[in-house]
Every structure is written in structure tokens, then in C-alpha cells.
Image (cartoon, rainbow, N blue to C red; front, side):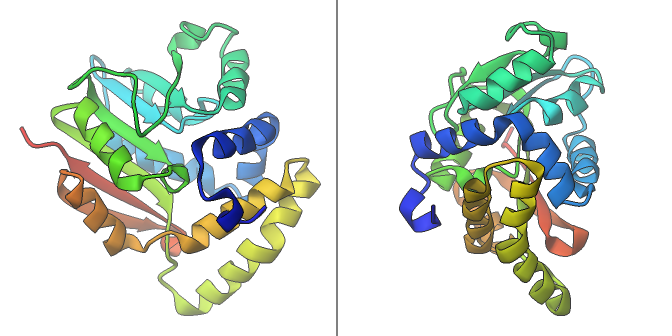
Length: 238
């Protein structure tokens, strides 16, 4: 499966994640050498949601990222277009899609969000935006459902800022990542696609420009782990 063959068609990407759902969190921990846990904490700090606030966690998968917001006292909704991911998350959160440990699981497409205008204090999406068919349309939808003055936090794989390390990282990404996924027991074809999608994703300033064009203001970013991922933050005008 190549990125060109898949071309980020929503039904095919959803099916790919359905196949990886059971071991998705384990594989993420292994292939990131545990860094994914630090990234989640950084996102939670940037979202900075507290009691009384409502957070939309897009591309939430099994809801592991969503839990970081509920632990801070916010109400968080896990939204994903992969039924396999959502089903796994529901089972892990008590078996009830609407009340599992306080995390509702909602099926939804980032380009056509099933929520009313001005609903959320914050919208966040972690390592999933690059899998959306139309990035700018998704960002406009996120803007629509965010309350005036609310914030957006995006965590996404990006471009390494240390040239010497970049060579090593790209070799790992394209050659070793699918093999590691296979050893852990996940779908290595899916991780070949993910590796290719990471390489093709725009760099930090380019993504910031796309976010601005979608209508967000005060766009800024911070590199994590030498730019393996970058965290972009923006706000909706009051």
C-alpha cells in the first residue's frame, strides 16, 4: 500500500486504522521510544483546559489522548472516523460509548464535523491531521465548532531541525518503522503508508500558513524532540 494508491480517501484511511486499532497504542509507544507520552503531556499543557471547559479531541482513536484532558477536570469528547478505533476505546473505557469514564465517543469526519457552531472551548488533533483528505477544509470546520476566543492545538509529525539526525530518522522511518510494527503485531502495510505520509507532510512554517488561511489567528508553533513532531497553537477571533 503506497500513499499514492491510498491518496487519503476517507473510507480507505478509516479501514486502515480499523485494522491497526487493537495494538495501536502499544505500537505508538514502541516506535516512538516512549516519546508519545511526553507529547501528550505537552498537548494537554498547551490546551490548558480546566473545569467547566469542553474539549474536542479529533482523531482521538482509542481515547488515550482524551484522558489527559478529563484528568485536568475538563469535559472532553473523543471523535474519530475509524469505528475500529472507537470500538476499542469504548471497551477500554467501560463499554459505554456515551458514558465510559466520562468520555463520550463520537464517530465523525473532520471535514464535516457533527457538532454545532461555537460549541468547544478548545479543539485539538494529534498525529492525525495529515490523514485528512482536505487539510484546510478540516481546519475551517474546527474553527466553526470553536467558541470565539477558543484555541486550537495541533500535534503532528514534522521536519527534523537537526540535519545530521534527520538522515538517521528518515532511514528509521522508511525502513525500520514498518518492520517494528510487524514485530509488535500490527499491520506493517499501514505503517508503510504512515511513514510515507510523514515524509510528504509540509514543514512547520508551511503548516502555520495553512492554519492562518483557514481563519485562525495568532498562529505559533513549538518543536518537540528535535522537530520529529511540532505543536501548532492558534486562536479563534473574539
